[in-house]
Structure formats: structure tokens, C-alpha cells
Image (cartoon, rainbow, N blue to C red; front, side):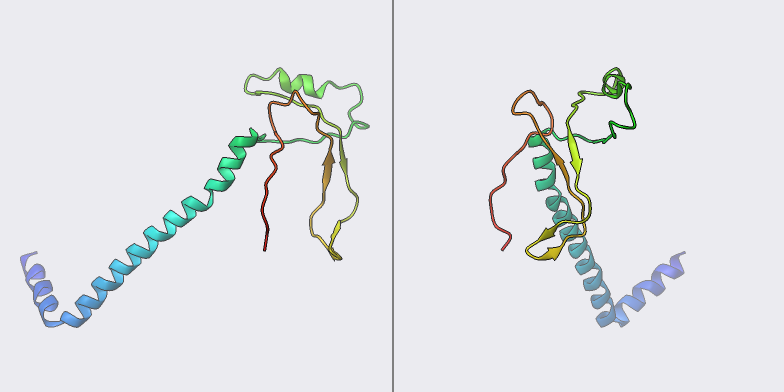
Length: 132
């Protein structure tokens, strides 16, 4: 074991340039990794803050009323222990893809009418600003 340490020490002294370069590469890699981790952590903060402000739902389920006539789906979910609240809202799924400024969008829209009061979850928050 001692022979390996002596050999490593001799190689470090003989090859100073490569040793310094390897040390700098490792140091730079650690710096870039810590910077990237900090940036990734800060990028999720705006989403988390808005999610908390809206008291947003973790799961939103849509049921077709014509297929589920006579079933008390909301009552079933409200009776579950881990469910905080259940809101029954009327929703309309737009057929096809919508257009915006003449370009077809790749997503579908679900239009939901929200009551003015009484909702403890999924509060509407107006966000101001520009995308430009």
C-alpha cells in the first residue's frame, strides 16, 4: 500500500501540468453542477408559488353525465377520508383543435364555468405581463 502512495506522489510531482489540469476540470465540473442544481431549484419556484396561491387541485377528473346518470360520483369521492373537497362543475370539451392568430394549436381546451363564490380550491388568479 505504501508503494502505491509513493508512486502516486512521484507521478503528481513529475506530471504537474496534467495534475493541475485534472484538478481544474474537477473543480469546474463541481461548480457547474452546483450552479445547475440551484437554477433548476429556482425554476420550479414560480409554479409552486402559483399552485399554492390558487389552492389548486392535485387531481381533476371529468365524467360524462350521460354515461353516469343516477350515480352519485361526487358523494362517493367526498366520503373518502383523504379527500379535502369535491366541486361539481359543468365542463365542455371543445371538439377539434383551436386556432390562435391563424395557427392551429396542438392542445384541446376544456371550458368550465366557475361560480363566483364558494370555491375553496382552484381559485382564478389573474396574471399580468407580456410574452414578448
